[in-house]
Image (cartoon, rainbow over all chains, first blue to last red; front, side, top):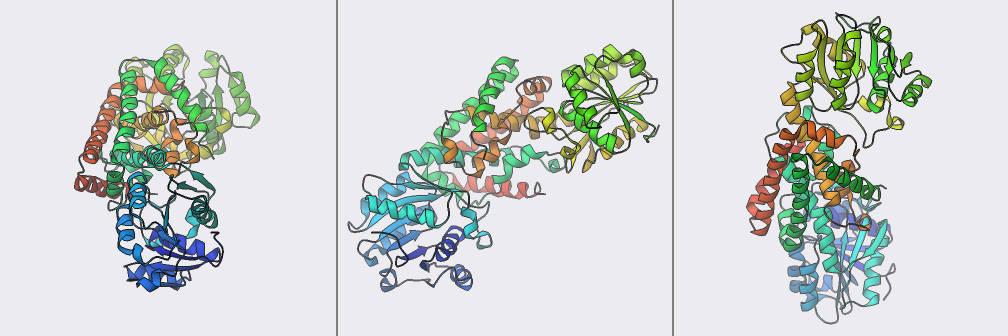
Amino acid sequence: MEINHNTRIVIVGTGLIGGSYAQGLTEAGFEVGGVDKKEENLRYCLERGWLAHGETDPTPDYLSQFDIIILALYPQRVYEWILAHMDALKPGALLTDTAGVKGTIVASIQASLRPDLEFVGAHPMAGRERGGMEYAGAAIFKGANFIVTPTEKNTPAGIEQAEAIGRALGFKQIVTLSPAEHDEMIAFLSQMTHCVAVALMTCKECDGFEKYSGDSFRDLTRIAKIDEKMWPNLFALNKEELVAQMDLFEAQFRRMRDYILNDEKDKLREMMVLSTQRREKFDR
Amino acid sequence: MEINHNTRIVIVGTGLIGGSYAQGLTEAGFEVGGVDKKEENLRYCLERGWLAHGETDPTPDYLSQFDIIILALYPQRVYEWILAHMDALKPGALLTDTAGVKGTIVASIQASLRPDLEFVGAHPMAGRERGGMEYAGAAIFKGANFIVTPTEKNTPAGIEQAEAIGRALGFKQIVTLSPAEHDEMIAFLSQMTHCVAVALMTCKECDGFEKYSGDSFRDLTRIAKIDEKMWPNLFALNKEELVAQMDLFEAQFRRMRDYILNDEKDKLREMMVLSTQRREKFDR
């Protein structure tokens, strides 16, 4: 099954990410429906023309019309929603999500899903420091990566549909990883960096330090403004991987501390040469 | 003694920071001389009109004409240079520096200085990831902080002169700290953040990860491109303070890791609320 402009799409959860999907997919020419318990989120999207219609408490009839169901809920709610509503979905429909962790979620959904439905995990690597509709808009996807996490339970057609959504939204790059590879990568590149920023910001009283701060501390703590409702749950869903990455970082940080304490300047220089060389690849 | 356009200034070390001072002070209307062993640095500044004249191996006569001597050398060389050349300096001259550590340097210089000279430490909190003249220019000071670190050996007139240089260079804010307060602040805000970035960039093989990286990892590792000739020396000069700050950070990072491992979400939420609240003060 191809994705074309007759493909009917519904977004479940029309907050920051879901609302941004709604704008992007509507502007790409799709008819997009919305489901959200919060009426104000739906209203925000409807007023802007990002949704064609929406429901706070969708009937089975409403849900049964869609070919693609995008779950833009907090990760721990994705599985619950699918279990509660899958009986209503159209045979052959594709389900996908936007969650920042994959291993546990993808496996449990695929194990429980109605056999004539298909779930392909996806993670749009874009966001803002804080949730909230005022930051929503398809512009947040420009230049960002879209990760698709298929498993052996997925079909080429299902994977192609999930990737087509990323392309329609204007992501810079669509990449594929297994759920386990995704979770290791995210633990290292995203979750652990948030832990580093929060630990920097809270490890000592620093009232008034903003007067003395150059760019370094500001850059390293930008993401220390963090949504305390979302992140502890994301961490919990990827706990083993995250703790493993934190331990790797801490061991290297401690090594550096010991080099400093013991005046091992050559060892420090080696680390800095490697660091400089590796970082160059991350320049855009 | 006031600083005015008859005040003759020499910059010793006309690399990235010294060259930027040269441009800024010349454009502020001063006649600025330069001293640098590297002729190419002097030539770079002379060709651009940032210096009126310069010497690679200055005679006592050359040095004796200046009212203000600005040492923009690697920190460990500031004390050596002053010891080697102070006999030639004009009675009543003011010496100042640009070094990123203060405690040991300021104390040893002030203890050895000719009694008719005065040294006031200063730290322009601006720079680039890498040294090198191609990044020089007074523009790097716009919006940045200039820290002056007087001691009980300084006079109000000397402190005023050191501050006047920061104002002439266009720094956003001139602030005063004791050398010890400065070093604690710098250990925390600058040196430790560089350690964090280098440890993140080197704690595991991450070839290819640039494809999956969002902004968080890029922000936290921007300063992982680091001058391996300068930083190990800066760390060594501020070792006790830096290791103390690293230990504070590591303890908090480990606390966070344990909260994650033990599912203490409420504790994580508390840290995140504090982190978010504190970080807001650092927004510009």
